[in-house]
Amino acid sequence: MGTAPRPPGHPDDATSAYVGLSAETAEQRARRRGWTTVRALPPGAIITLEYLEGRINFEVRGGEVVRCWSG
Image (cartoon, rainbow, N blue to C red):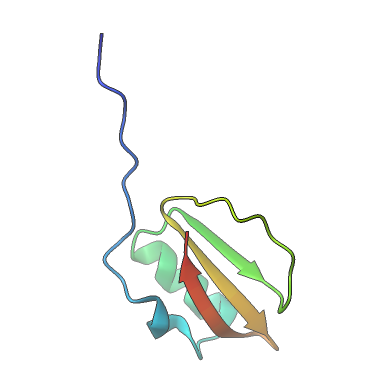
């Protein structure tokens, strides 16, 4: 029996570096740095609390990232 695949985990990246960027620039940077899922959300969006390894979340207001977190 083979071993189960392991998820790649999070890239070595500071989420605070995305705050202040345009949503488009932030998404491009995140994908270049290895994030597998990039999610942009409006302020106050209702989201599930499931944790997804390799996902970065952006709260976007007026086209600019105002908050960023992983999972």
